Length: 466
Image (tube, rainbow, N blue to C red; front, side, top):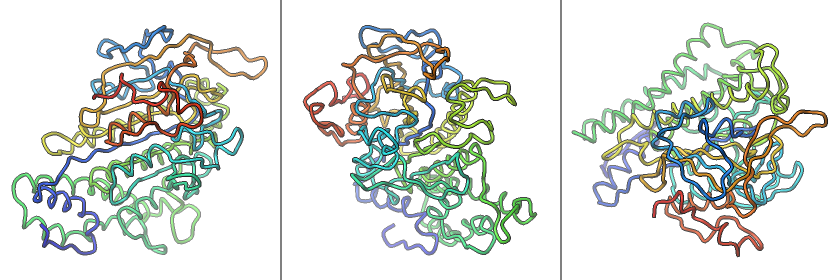
């Protein structure tokens, strides 16, 4: 394999070739992958706690999920219940996620009390820290969805290599595709040029196939299948472009496609799944509202995201805002489940790619829009090759309290859990993830007196397999 050279499409075959070469040298290690899926407006307990489970507990509990039904919001994860861990009772620590946690959601650091938290970068985020340990051709793939504007190309919102070093989220699927899978012309049918991706690679593929037999040939087939899935999407879009059905306002190019929040979420997940499947990256972050409250969940509701977070009704859907938000979280869960299925269907070593992957499914604003981060729910899917304990609901000590909005005159709605001040914080969870990928730090982003508190350091013994 070391003598094999590739041409114009070579970058897309590089991960496969690197694996074959490492196998020949005896240095190959099964890669680990981590995906962060963030959404706004909170992750309320009724959307993440199995039916019939009380959140009021005096001591930490680990409850098997086998006999419990998942709520509507995360029901798409039912086929993966044995790979599922749900956490409640973690606190935000120094992060104030009111109206969105900004950069603090993935760093566990205080970035300011006002709009500063959406612009100030106080330190390294957990996805960037993991990307340093799990390097890929693209160290990290950061994909965003802007409900406020379909034309937003890139936005700094969630991730950073360190203080003052933010990582841009690519908000346009066609531009994310360009950076990952090839150049796109600015004055021609973009979708048609992307449709021809596999034509560009055909010569390289034939040369490589001639040198492979048995399991190696099968692995290549799955590698190419991941690229074909995207090629099929681009072919369909190309046909629509040529028929004129996409050209609405721009004289030379179609309007940005897809346009709605719902369709953009779907497209970004498709790109993420293919990038992981072909080995272009090992770390992906998808932020569906750019860690803030903005715009509308177009394709689902025309009521603003802020109004829905206050439970204002969508009269067209005849649903209260909280139920509309459940639909948006369900869509995120469905696309996450589709990504998991893609990885599960891709062989890797003696199992599948899913066996070595972890997805962190969370809100950037803890449990509600106006959160004080007394309970920051997380859903973990996958075990990173056996490093994470799954099939469990982990409840840290909590007392029940009423949930809801705090606007004058409004009725408080529902019940939730309030974690005790002695509970671990999200920093503790993030340090647990670092231990799981082979970077056992003393702590993750603890400052001041927090560094002297062993309960905040981690790792979480309920989660990490020693």
